[in-house]
Image 1 (cartoon, rainbow, N blue to C red):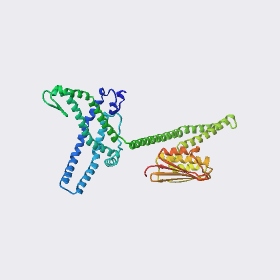
Image 2 (image 1 turned 120 degrees about the vertical axis):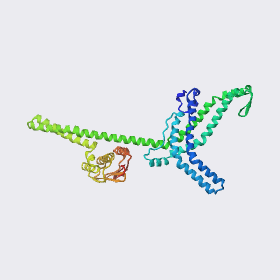
Image 3 (image 1 turned 120 degrees about the horizontal axis):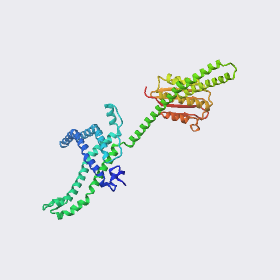
Image 4 (image 1 turned 180 degrees about the horizontal axis):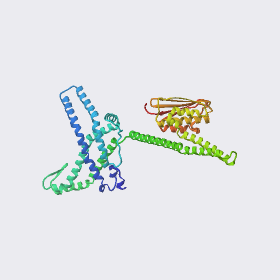
Amino acid sequence: MADSAARTALEAVLRRRFLISGWPWRCLAYLVTSAVPLVAMAVPILLFGVPWVFALRRAADGGRAPLTVALLVTLGVLLVAGVGPLFAVPLAELERRRLRLVDARPIESGHRTARGSWAWLRTRYTEAVTWRELGYICLLGAVAPALYMALLAFALVVGAFLISPLLADGTAVALGFDSVTNATEALPYALAGLVLLPAVPYLTAVVAGAHGAVARALLGRGPDERLRAELVEVSRSRARLVDAFEAERRRIERDLHDGAQQRLLGLTLHLGMARLDLPPGSPAAQNVADAHEQAKLLMTELRELIRGIHPRVLTDRGLPAALRELADRSAVPVTVDADLPGRLPAHVEGTAYFVVVEALNNIAKHSGAAEAVVAVRRRGDLLTVEVRDDGEGGADPRAGSGLTGLADRVAVIDGRMLLSSPVGGPTVVQVELPCGKE
């Protein structure tokens, strides 16, 4: 496989062209630059850790009571938990940026956005990702120095083996567990160093890749954060679609009301004037009269179409007035009980209105009901719309009665629909819509 296909250092190690690629140098740069977060960690350790360690030692050496030692240990843990996140968050951001050296895959922070100092602190101390970052920083300080020193020692031994013939000029030169005094004795070590030399970049890549894998696991978004971020994005996208659909519907309603309806009204008036100018009973008068009647019918249909797209009364006077007008035009007698303290968000009013429209259409077409009741209530940030009829019941969303589409319309703004329709009635459709705080 080509080296270009490798996205991480651990993948690059398995490529045939690894040694002549840029990965060994990237891995070396990653290990060398690890000194930056390690040095940055030393600052809070010196400021807060050293005095606490001295106090703990004095308590232990002075024969203090175990309770005193336990208290100091507890205070140390609380100090790490209290101050640690303040240093871990920026260091973790640095580590996510450094990770690009050994892992080309994108990595995002799992932190939520917070505005204001107190909100930022409250959010950071309650996020799981913050404590994972603190755990990573502690792990980096505890494990990385020892691991890097072992790798450095191996590299120095290999280097010493390679140049041992140059160093052995009659004086004893120590090479690990043995020593040599001349080039002949050092030659086997030089050959061993030559054989082990390719292992240095491979070990460097393995150590850097393992470090990067741990960093990605602890510093990236966990499964919950990724799922939450995806859900948030889906919710935002859905809200944008709802807003765009509502704006487009209002534009169509405005264009029909101010454009097509006004022109049709002018045509109707001109036809009415033309009827007055023609001799009564003439064929031309009859044709103009027929056209005039058709224009008036078309005007009525267009007015109903505009009202179906977005009723003007809903925009001007709000949901209760729009529901009462809807009840006046219903084929089934409808009682409206709407008790709302004020106006609702436009998308909530629109959804609630068209839910009632669909429910009343279903009642008129399928229920055989003699009357219906529409009740609207707002409790806190929840709007409840209930449509009840005394019909035959037995409504089934799978029968194509429009209930499935109604439920989908409600779900778009994170609402829910409840249906109760036993055979023999009554049928109750209840919808709950979030509408924000009062």
